[in-house]
Image (cartoon, rainbow, N blue to C red):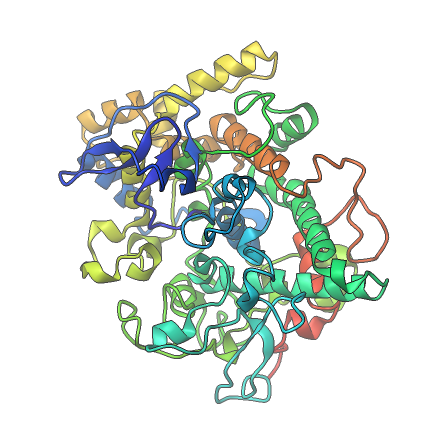
Length: 551
């Protein structure tokens, strides 16, 4: 789920990891002035062997080949893109450009450390990043969509339904740049709409606290604290159990970590086994097309294809139905009004007991397995910073699966077998339930519905079963299981989330008595993503579905 253009990783005690001119991994040390500002990755296990490029190409082609075997999960499709939003929160490197010279040592360390703290929403706060905030310095800025020809629902500008945009600059690309701390959240429309949902949630929380009243001098920080804690509660209770086997999640959050930073507190690091492999599950969950709203749905003008979701974004696309996506100066400046999402189609509001919040259809995410939606075989170059490369449309470097697998080679990532042995040893020493290793047959054939590896040569199969790329291993684990991360992948993901939640400036783990009070105002054990969006919509169906169900 991480942005696809990171080509260099600073790993503690190893330096910057990248490829040399011949495609071999190399390490170099940043300058003494640059090193303290590098986002800190770490390594859970040992280094692993590089896989042959021919094997990686065949694996990638198999994982993105058109197929009739894609299986739906029971997870609402909105969680695919919530997962990407969360990834950007975890991996935002605030020290690359955002932190100036006027920072303390504590701020510098925290800025290069992963934490589940919504810095991708808040930046450095209203005192240092005024351009992300409204005139009051408390609420976050919102954007306005652009009216399009059509009916009464689409031929008006709508404020609060797009991310704010810069609006000035020498080029169209400059003008439509999202004015948010992390522009990766505008690389596809589903993530951008999720981001504006969080902006609106913050602003509604401000409204509720101001009515209590909370002194204006304290209002922003109090609102941020409450938003972050509600967010963490939702991630722990609603998001994680949908992607990781619940027994693993419950064990980690009830009894602590067993494999990562055991007994360690303070600022965290990001294991490259998480970032480069285990948390890239969302690529499998993405659908080829969605029922997006009453206009862009099956039977409507056209379904919202994955390519269109890239197109109607500012980072990867051009906010227009036409134009060369590799030309950042084509297209429009604001999101067209007819592309506002109907949230009832991406999240399940049935627990609210309000029939009007039920949409005509609920999109489901694809089951986590070794199949990726076909459009991911040819990414728009803007998604990985490759517009200047001039790559042909069918170049293997545009294939998301290939990019993931090659990146693992670059950092010499441990194999699935290596990580299984490490985790098995640590869980055994801790007296916890141990995972079950994948058999060679399961690695090659999965459960029969995943990637078809029949085109691999015998030599490639032997290499794959002996040294399976960790990302592929994790997806096969889910495929042969119940569709959740389990074993190696589940343990890594659950423990990293626990660590990054603990490392946040505000943390529900350090305040176990805290309980969410939105949306009802009374403390509760339950707070879901649907609850968050309902608060963001001020409880109104017309804000969850601004275009309505009929023209």
